[in-house]
Image (cartoon, rainbow, N blue to C red; front, side, top):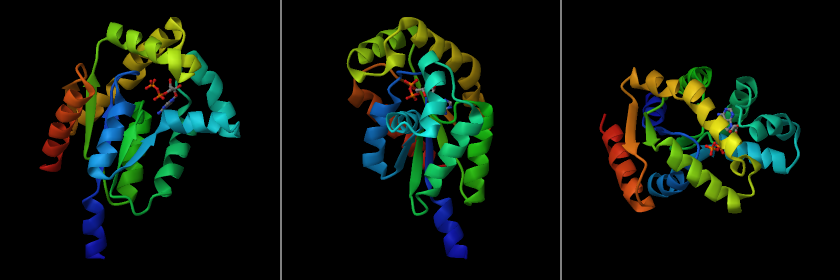
Length: 203
Ligand code: ADP
């Protein structure tokens, strides 16, 4: 029992945070390789459900197209199912979740029930105009309807500021909030991110 407890406590659970288009997906790919963590992107999960036209996908579609958040009740259940599928994980990278304070509370409760917790949240800081440019550029090839229309992109930024940004303060109050400059080359940002992860690891 003791051993089990100890191994659970050594999990590394990172929240990759930042506005839409800040590079979370790109950097998550680098982190999973380096730290062997399971990557959970709620945006990717919703897009998968939509492409298979499941009930969940149909539910999420209208919200996503408008740049709004999918309701917490739907999102939290989906996240929990995904975490439950990896009982032996060394840890997780949460990308695009939590996006509201209730989601953060639900994540804390879920991890607590498994004897573990969020190790740290790392925010990629990128300004609004840079984000709009990046997302519209991505929209030319991503096939994502929510990336193609400037008004939808700006709506996502507004939702980020009002509903998601407070999640940073929630973890900062527990000394678990870190932010790094999200401008630069992919390698430069990956390096800053590694430094942040190592500093979290030493806590
Ligand atoms: P981005 O970070 O570029 O906005 P995502 O792929 O993370 O892209 O999310 C796309 C959309 O999926 C969001 O605008 C939102 O509608 C929905 N979504 C993703 N994650 C969540 C979440 N945790 N809670 C509610 N809605 C979400």
